[in-house]
Length: 146
Ligand SMILES: Cc1cc2nc3c(=O)[nH]c(=O)nc-3n(C[C@H](O)[C@H](O)[C@H](O)COP(=O)(O)OP(=O)(O)OC[C@H]3O[C@@H](n4cnc5c(N)ncnc54)[C@H](O)[C@@H]3O)c2cc1C
Image 1 (tube, rainbow, N blue to C red):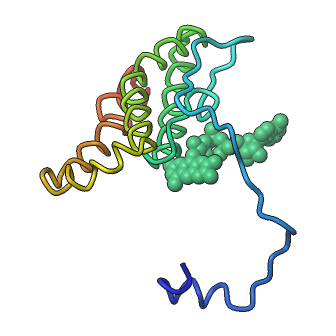
Image 2 (image 1 turned 135 degrees about the horizontal axis):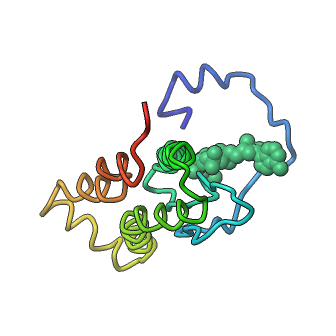
Image 3 (image 1 turned 90 degrees about the horizontal axis):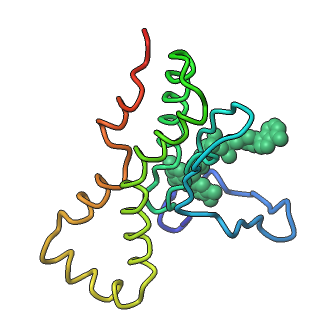
């Protein structure tokens, strides 16, 4: 990365590892969408939904679900009701993201992908759009009170 990006190389010049080995993460529950909540908690962000990483949409989902939770709370909507509605509003996006992520992990799909990109260069744009919080989902299911 430093070879490809001189600015990064400049930033990291002289840097030394602080840990003996890198911190790693594993078993991220991609595709998880919370069905219900307990104790009146409005669950948001990764506690509400964990979209596959390749979409780069986790932060947007976190902000979106926070916004929805605030609107639901202000509207007096019970947490359990909110959670169920949130789940159905994110379900399509999540399942498409899982499908695309599984495809990218599949060696046959990876072999076919370059061919698909040649035939239909816009396929990645369409995939990206379908795996993001949709504009309509950003307004629904709860409108924010001004
Ligand atoms: C390696 C990796 C790369 C990613 N890359 C991207 C990306 O490029 N683009 C993107 O959009 N998303 C990315 N994501 C996903 C994104 O980071 C998350 O979806 C998003 O941060 C979720 O926000 P959150 O507020 O739910 O949780 P978090 O951002 O995890 O915030 C939760 C916070 O709560 C704190 N906390 C936990 N327990 C307690 C406790 N008991 N008391 C007090 N504080 C507590 C934690 O320390 C943390 O600061 C990535 C995730 C990972 C793991």
